[in-house]
Length: 98
Image (cartoon, rainbow, N blue to C red; front, side):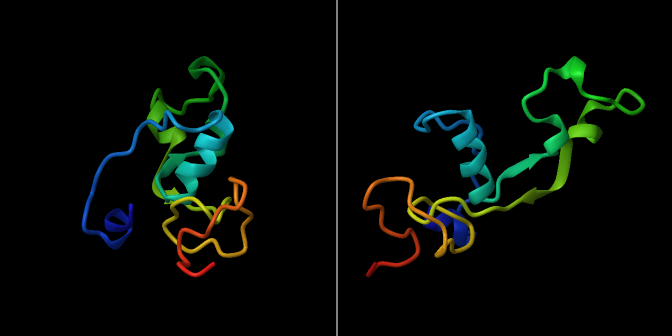
């Protein structure tokens, strides 16, 4: 993950099987700045999403990723020092001495 954030690796992250639930997956994708979906498309079936000119991707996909801090003890694109840990006693991903 550190190589990824330094730009030394460029993987595609498309699945997180280790998360507790879908809500946490969304938080983790945002925290690593790899979330490219409009909020209007979350938790909806394709037929429930308004589509302009038949272009589903234009209505749901973002050109730039969304970032948000949620947990200080999980990998993040930017430091999340003020966020709570998700794991009991979880140490900061960014601080080695915490």
